[in-house]
Image 1: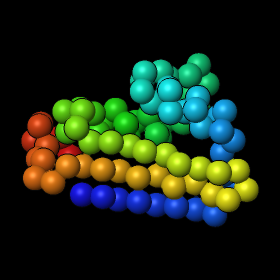
Image 2 (image 1 turned 90 degrees about the vertical axis):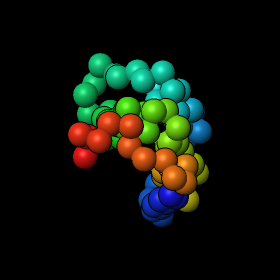
Image 3 (image 1 turned 30 degrees about the vertical axis):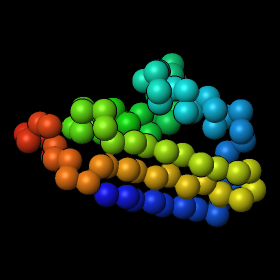
Length: 84
């Protein structure tokens, strides 16, 4: 399954985008609870539910917009059926 959403907003600076991607890889939660909490929650849930096989990708360019992509391999079912 492939889900993509994009906007034409301000975009994200390359340095900030690298910081976000690194935080998602390391599952680092910032001291400021308002920073990227939605992305962190989504990434964590995908890892738990799909046993690390699903991917969350973020692409962005300043003054152009941002695209977020979810990739879940075909035929992959949830590893924990009790999770919604």
